[in-house]
Image (cartoon, one colour):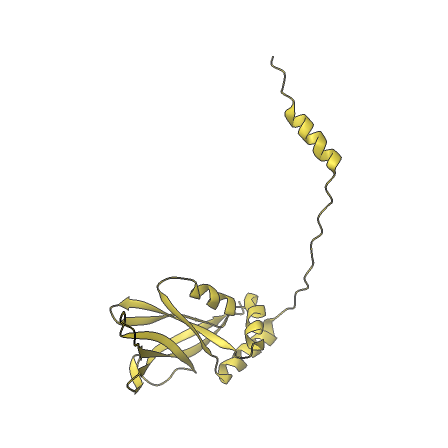
Length: 169
């Protein structure tokens, strides 16, 4: 209950590399608000160094329990969406996930096998995430837990009792 879906279009780039081990690299470069009227994997631009493609649509899912994370993202100098691409075959990729949660994005980047990049969040999506934050966020007061002081005498009595052997019948 309270979950919201935001449809986005993902733009990826195939960039030429100059190293001897790989000729190019794929990476997410942008997110478009809404559902573009173009087919997935349509080439958008091409140059000597880079080709860009519309990779397809994805639904960003916002959860009320994660509003503090969205607030942290929106308060950053550059709010971002994290996009993960998964290789599905030789030279073929699919959008694995798109998230507005910066901590989920960071954990995605720690995995192996997916290409994860933070891309700028468009103003239209910032407005939707901000509205969701305002509608569902509940500020939680941090209460530091206080531990009970240890009673050294009680600890000594426990150890002494633990050392006794039960009498054999």
